Image (cartoon, rainbow, N blue to C red; front, side, top):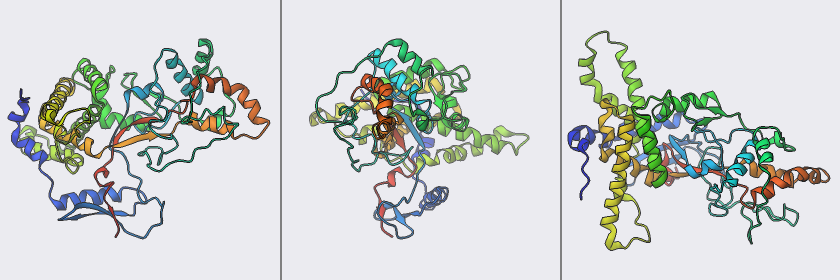
Length: 430
């Protein structure tokens, strides 16, 4: 049965306007401003009628030289990974003491909860920067006969059995009553809770907390100070995303981001009018919404259920059924999100057509979000200490490594969308 979204029928002209590609000059101006805002950037975007948009270098450069440090627009940590890694909900750097990171791992591990993947994602050292995408280059394995009994995160061979620690020890580690040797060399920013009171989002600084709140989280927070229409529906939406596909979390961030940008622009625009604001908004409502939508308008291409790759376990004869099921899944997610954060003035954003294009944009342009763990760095540091410091330090640290087991080096893992994501595979020589 065909999925029918009432908003698609009701808001057809506005939806078409949002999905209409911006004029080439407007796209060029957008990317010019974007690249100008990136410190030290030596790249530029050019449009070609035959090949589309491409990235060109302004100057000659050497292999391995940094040309661009892009800033993510939307990102989310995989829900299961939150068990193993406590990171900032905005910039995704690790937060809290090293003892807290290890203690949390062991605490959840005792309950049989862990997202550890071992070698599934490659070496955790293979990251491009603190907040960027995973690097495709292979890292060098550091192995020798004295290296923690072959306990590297991706060591080959049979796995060692984990040696549990008493509950009291784990709690003391989490509470800061136990301090590991040399852990001060791997300090991370203190944990700052969400100001909305959701107990789901944590930050490395007030700067990140405020940025997240103003960009997305004020609408997606489930705490007492949330600006969501219904926090109950928001919890249902989040549960559905966690159980099906966390790409819906990114889509929710994109919609919340656009709504909040629209509201801010509207407030600034109306501040210059003292009367008849309703009539003014009749004329300027759509232009303001289009401007708020612009970062997404230059990236979307196809609907999710049209561009998603057919899984290997789905027979080609069942492709139509599969794509319809994906569309129905998206509609279910959209209905839950609409119940949670609906804004009448931004109603077109809650159409299935728009939602499908947003998720399709992520499907085609997403990058893996991988941040190296300070826990891995710590144990590598201990292992590289000279004698007798190494032996003394291992007397304290070894039991914790034994308790974590072979998969001690768990990275922060998630998915992210960058403003220049669709161009990351289009670098061309000047």
